[in-house]
Structure formats: structure tokens, C-alpha cells
Amino acid sequence: MPIKLLLADDHRILRTGLKLLLASQDDFQVVAEASNGVETLEKLQSADVDVVLLDLSMPVMGGLDCLREIRRRHLPVKVLILTMYSENQYIKELMTQGADGYLCKDTIDTELFQALRTVAQGGRYLSAEDTHMLLDSLIAGPPDTALEELSCREQEVLQYLVRGYSLGAIADELFISIKTVSTYKTRLMNKLHCATKADLVDYAIRHDLLK
Image (tube, rainbow, N blue to C red):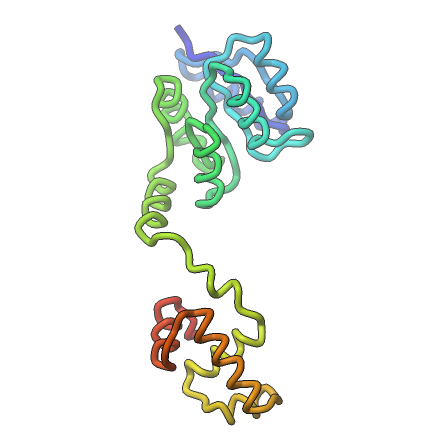
């Protein structure tokens, strides 16, 4: 039996191209099309679908909201996300929300068939590049958010400190008092959990701040 597909993408030309590509394989059959998430959900009520090829960026209802609704309704379909984006935050969020696979549009011609067959058979699909990206992020551990909490002035002071400027020199560069520079230094030590200036330099090296 062929794998029955629903193509959800707001670009008609892309859907037409996908249908032509899929028609070259005997085990695929496009049974429905949709241009947004709302249409996708409506078509799933009437069409017998095995896999939804779901674009992430669509009007009315986007791919992520549509995916969430598909899972909330417990619809018995596999979902392969098709998108222009290839970033960790998208991949992690989509797989967490119940996507069965994730495929970047620039790899359609080489990976689409394999991806569809994989998810149709109950597997999960990521390209080799996306898999390596996820593994690298897991190995690196969670991001250090301390830098995001620094004010613009604190970041400026940090740059001068790790380059060996004295408090007086920093005060001259930023047109502020030495006492104010000292206050910023104390805040930096506390926020970045550094006990000495050497710790600050080490922190800057580890986070590639010396540019």
C-alpha cells in the first residue's frame, strides 16, 4: 500500500513541485493539500492520511501551532516538518512538541524520500547535519545566561578589565569616576561568579570574549 500524504504549504508552486517529485516513486500518494494549519486540520478530518508534510511558516495557523493541535487531538498521523530554518531551537522545540521528523527545504531533493519512509514506518528523522548539531549542543551543556544579564556598561567595563586596563584608565576611557568603575567591577565579579581579575580573564577566554 502506498504511503498516503497530505502536503501543507502556502506556496502552491512548491506543492506542485513536491507532487511531481513524489510521483516518481511508486510508494507515495498525495491524497490532500492545504495552504495553512486550519486547512490541514480540516483535511485530516476527511482524508485518510499516513504522513503530513507540514511547512513551518504558513498564514492563519503556522506549522508549530498546527502540530500542537494535531497532537492535542491525538490524530493518528505522522508529521514531517518541512522548513527553511535549521537551528537548534527550532529542532528541539518541534521534536519536543511531537514532530516525527525535521527536514530543511534545501535538502528536499536528496532526503525527502528517506525521511518520509522513515517516519511512516514509525521512526524519527533528522538529517546527519541536524543530528550532529543537536549532539554538539548536548555535549556543550546548557548555555551560560550570565552574560545576557550584564548591562551594556558592565560589558564595556568587562572588556577593558580583561585587556589589562587599570581602574583609572577605564574611568578615563568611559568618562566616569574610578569609584564607579570599581562598583561595576564588583557587580561583574558577583554576576559572573569570579573571585579575582584572573578569574574574569579566564571567563572571557572560555566564552570567546577577547575579540
